[in-house]
Length: 352
Image (cartoon, rainbow, N blue to C red; front, side):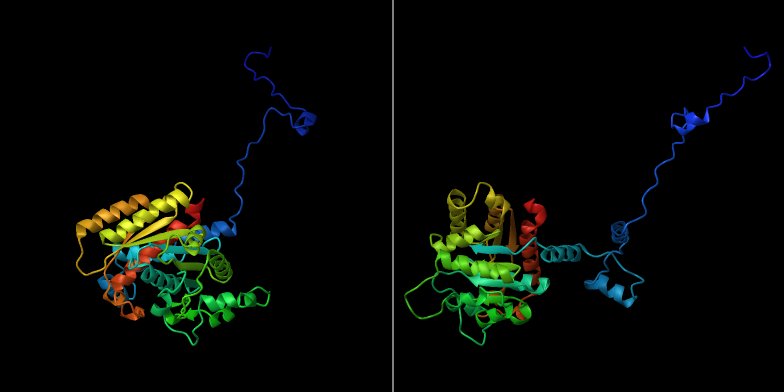
């Protein structure tokens, strides 16, 4: 026992015990964080990116007049347009096929195929082809810009061997497709010969589809009107996305819903139509039954992944070649949003 008034001697840990790591007192320093990586740096830059400057209307004018010193908040409409543009431009994990369907004639399939071709082509910078899959003669080629040749799907099928070797080139397809100039997509017309023999079958479509998936990022298919035709069914089975078109008419909508029932019963797996389809509800005239349109929007939204309204456009109803420069800004915006819905449904996030 230590004498009164004196502190007891401190215990000394032997050096051997300290060296062996069994000391009773250890130094617990917090772990050091690793230095920032390139990925950390890039993520930080994205977090500090300045918000987009307004370009539209009075907000855009004020931003430009003040050299950016005064920059009003971007309007909701412009934000929606920018978000739709980003969706249309997203990268997919490989080529994708979009098939436009409704077995009734005059259901807006060909128009929708061309407008989607132009919208994706312009905003994605090309890599888009539209195919007329009518088993005999369709009108996709008639409504597209002409080419310096009269070749169609029939002639391409006769020369598929040109594209089977390693020396095959995308440019050689120009002998058979019809470039759409500033719309930045190509068109393959259906057989236009004035004959009553021969038609596109399932094997022919399979071969054409495989060829175009090799050379294009987006393959758009105008499906024709015969749901029972082998080439129609082949296109439906190849589709990564089905776009069901209808006008604001009872007969066109009835045809589309009858087709949807048939596809779900005999062609698609359970739930596929809800996961892999978009409906376009198109106004065929300046004045329509608004109650019917609202009912159709609700009905097709339940059957498909999403339903998108398409406004009336005088430049699309004549049935001739489409002059995209004469279409209204409202029409182009509606098609941007419609194609954004298609791209979002095709996105890798939806596939996983």
